Length: 370
Image (cartoon, rainbow, N blue to C red; front, side, top):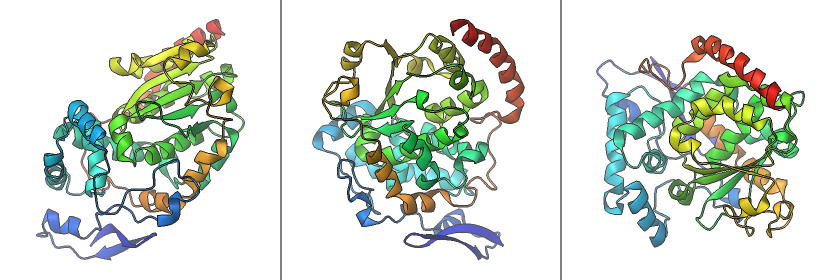
C-alpha cells in the first residue's frame, strides 16, 4: 500500500491511501495526484491591489509583449515552444524521479525553467534542490504559513516595497538591526523570507524580471552578526542561490557598520562569483543608493518619494494567502522514497564541524572590526 498526498477539494488537503500494484506505471502513479496549482481564494488579492493576485489554475500567459521579448532575449524562452518545454521537463521528472511528490502543472514548472534559462537538466536539479531544502531544514518548513511569522513582519525585519523599480523588479527590504537574538530564534527570519519569496515568485513578471534586495544594516551589532554563524549562513545562501526559482539581480547594502566586513566574510565563501558581484555597498550615501534604486520606489525615510514605509501592506498580502500556503506546505515529505545523488545541495551535519572551525576564525575578525 502506498500513501500519496492528494488534493481533494479547494482549500483542503488530506492523506489518502490507495492500492498500487508493482506493475503500475509511473504515469499512473502521478495521475493519482491532482497536479494542478493549489486552489486559491479569488478574493485573496482584495485590499492590496498593488501586488498581482495568484495565478489561475490553468496556465495562461500574462506577460506583456515587452516581457515576452525580454524572456526570449534573456531566458531563451520561445513562446511557441513554451508548453513543449514544460512537457519535456515534466517527462524528465516522471522518468527520473517517479517517486517525487511535486506539482507538475505548467505554472509551477515554468518557474524552474525560467530560473535556469530553459536548460532542462539544470531546471530539474533546481527542482530537486528546492525539495531537498525542505528536507534538510525541517525547522524552517514545518508548519510554514504566514500566521507563524507575523511577529517577524510586525517587528519590521522585512517587507516588500509596493512600487517595483523601472526594470519591473520588486524590492525585498530587509532590516536585520530590528531583530535581537532574545526576541525569537533566527530561523523565524528565514521562514519569513522564504514565505515572501514564495509569494513574490508567483507573478510571471517576477519570474522574468527577478527581484532586488535592499538591506539596511542600521543597528546591527555583535549579537546579530555572530548569531547565525557560517552553518546557518551557508544554508540560507544555498537556498537562495541553488534551491529557489528566483533571480536575484542586485543586493543593495546601506548603513553598513564596520562590523559588516566580518559579516560578509562569513557569507562570501558560499557565494558564487556572479552573485558576489551583485552586492553593492552604499554606506550612508543615499545618492549612491538612488543611482541603483530610484527615489520614486523608496519610502520617505530613505530619501524617496513613495510615502512613509508601510509595514502592514505586505503583512496583509501574506496573511490573506494563509490557506494557500497551508495547501502548499502542509504535505507529506516530497522526497520520501526518492534516491538523491551523494552531492546534493546540503552536506548536513557532517559539515557543521568544519564550519564551526571556520566560524572561530571569522569571529575574531568580527571582534576586530567591531
